[in-house]
Image 1 (cartoon, rainbow, N blue to C red):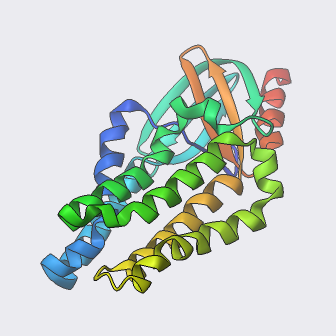
Image 2: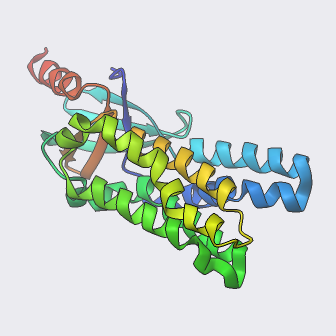
Length: 233
């Protein structure tokens, strides 16, 4: 039975390399357009999107007390074994789940490292954006999900406008730097990144084969589905 509105967040180690390549391709699209032209841009975009989809959670299926986590457009699967415990993580801080969230959190560091590499010796000029991602990471990891949802509106404003506030001094200093384009892309990326975390519930499945983090639109739906399977014929 498929649980509607639920998908795996934990990225199996055999998919981690694919996720890394996908993120590297997607965050380097600006450089790709400059160096390879519009065809190179669309080729990088398509390949990056396909690899990202291949390494992403697709759906969660239940069979008795066992869950199957499906990845990569329904191609790849991981089993939990018999589920021993299920936890709604609404009151838990993300900082306690880092071992399950590295697949979700790796995109911003790649973005920063690539920016530094592309700007070369002038990479220190991306310092405002390093500060921006450190602030977002701190907010996400230091506070419970329930509180983040209550403050979602303020967080969205922070995600959109903080890159501009931090990088604006560069324009006043007369520094020749693509701060406008980087501020725009960072604010949009940060907004999407933050919304992705605070707009969903999280459930931790502890099974015979390990622990698995699942995102869903409603944590109660997974708990109810498991209870139904347990009490079923």
